Image 1 (tube, rainbow, N blue to C red):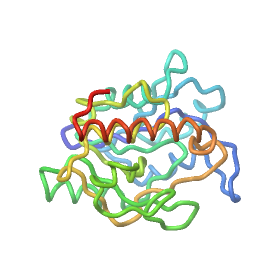
Image 2: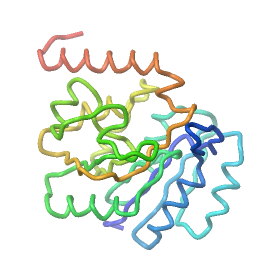
Image 3: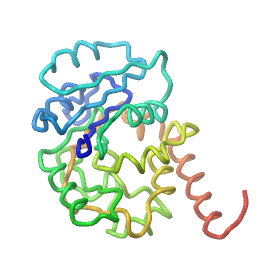
Image 4: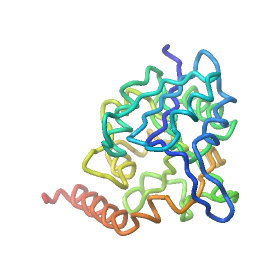
Length: 239
């Protein structure tokens, strides 16, 4: 399974919310993965205490190579992400949150980058946000990810393909219930190990349950904490 790719889902829910006429739900996420069936793909799903019909939805996709796990109780997004990573067996992990969708060319384009450069650990790209191609979810970002990462999170989480070994060595910080991906990138992204593909790799579905909407105050506080820590680390200031 050295070349196997793991597709991870986290905090599974069948979204029933509507935003701009768009229905966001788990079955849309899984339907997109039918294009990636085969011996080199595994889909790792961690159910973080859902109370809806998640299990029934997953059971309806028996043709997909799904590995389904349930937390004994709601353990949080970072714990669930880490558990999915540890349970995966592939060389690479393609991150995909349950309310987003993977575009058909995503893995082909991302793997081409890895094949051309052994120094690369992370590949990311743009996303179609509410049906509109954008260079960032909420903002325009430059191609210099490392510099931008000092001030904001320029990486769209559901576009990331990462070496499993790198993620296992670092993992998400369970102290962060929001912005956990931003905190992770500040620890592992370097000027040379991350490549951004200037093409859309995923569909980011906007709905009223997005963390950016439901936990905006917590998200802003977490961002400030991470940016402040980055500044102190760069200046060798102990906090």
